[in-house]
Amino acid sequence: MNWVIRKRLLSFTCISMEVVFRRWVFSFLIGCWVFISVAFSVESLNGSPKVRGVNLGGWLVVEGWIKPSLFDGIPNGDIIDGTQLQFKSVVFQKYVSTVNGGGAEVTVDRDVPSSWETFRVWRVSATEFQFRSNAGQFLTSDGGGGSVSATAQSPSTKETFFIERFRNRVHIKLLNGSYVQAASENQLTADYLGVPGWDDNAATFEMTIVANILHGDYQLANGYGHDIAKEVLRKHRSSFVTREDFRFLFEHGINTVRIPVGWWIAHDPNPPFPFIGGSLAALDKAFSWALDFNIRCIIDLHAAPGSQNGVEHSASRDGSIDWPNSADYISQSLDVINFLASRYAHHPALLGIELLNEPSAAGVPLDVLVTYYLRGYEVVRKYSSTAYVIFCQRIGNADPIELYQANIGSLNTVVDLHYYNLFDSFFNNTSAPDNIQFIYKSRQPQVQSLNNANGPLVFIGEWVNEWYVNNGSQAEYQDFGKAQLDVYNAASFGWSYWTLKNARKHWDFEWNILNRFLLLEASSNKQIPSNVLLLMLACGCFYFHHVV
Image (tube, rainbow, N blue to C red; front, side, top):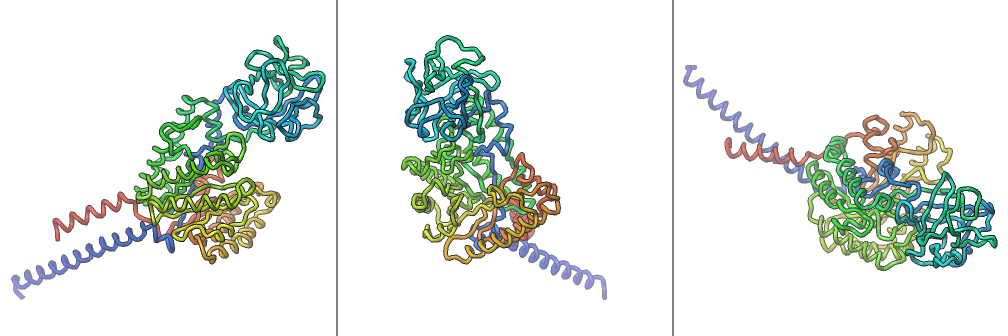
């Protein structure tokens, strides 16, 4: 065979190989495009992949137990909004008490304190306070030296008192300068003149802090004051969750973040007193970061106006549950849902909107909640037919089946269950095997039953790899986490861990993963970040333009 024929055969072979290579590259790029498009679709969560999520708790809604250092600089920080106090006369050795818990006079005649002898603080400044009785009325005085009663429905200057402190002893002074004292007839009066000493006199009381458990947005903002609180929250919001955290989540198979927000976000940048603006800008960043890493976002109304459960993550001022008792509060909540849906409905990173977090079974009647959920569903549907609308079960003594029987919406609806082997005396003194068996014997049947129910999808929106087991070993934590993942992976919508970062290490998702206390297998449906996707598409376009 001469060299000309050999050259032609070689040329033909090279051309054939180039054609095959081009077709292979074309097929590869098209395959990648199809794979990514399907994996990145909201509808795919009906089957696989399901939500494998992490909550961004403690970020845009403050919870002091997640990051206690946020409250370190508050002056008189042990007396913030919601702190529960008791006062005992050092002369009579009797406690200050509201007759019938409030609504009448105040006496100094109780040997043993209970609810009538306990007052909830409304903080005015570092030294000025208002005191709310068990029944809801405020201590008040006319300032003329008469008795002190618990009859004011709302506080003003006559209900505001200075507290002067020396160790565990206090003086309670009115704005006019006179002091409150325990009168000889067991009455609390506001007629002590002069400056009392710290010895045993009628104007001196021992103060006991019964509880100081509320450390939420209200306590932080009102404790520091607007200007300092603004700087504290600016630093917190810019550093507690970052773009690199989204990268970490993506690299460990997480495809969704559930983001708690407070009702004041709809009023950014100047929300009502005492709340601090800036959470909306942070939420916008989260959506941008999510898009970079093909992570979906669930926006969760965690704190409703008036508080739906009385705890700090609902931004309650003093533990009261006022949300269900006010049409205005419910209407404001729907306005927040309208704001969030209109702003994010067409954002490619939005997966769903949760209408309310953890309404209290004791404080929120089911009919009120269902009506709100129905109206909230309609609000979201005005803007999106595909975004999931999520209904959280009531916390406390409530069966989640009640929401399946309520017939709330028909398209892309989800019921959110929160599963903790905590917060219940049932789990006290339980062993590691007890906790693990509870997951399989109690939680698993409920998940299976709700999966088979005719209605919304099932979402384990909060769970944690923590329990009441003392000194649990790493292997025991791994087994407990495995049991939860075995069961919660079966939920028809998926699950979300509480929370990404936390001062308590076993609540901290990042710590659990890095220290191998929670063994989370990489998702077989891990998606390709959008920046990688864009690079692939750009390379493909360049190839077809310059080569093909």
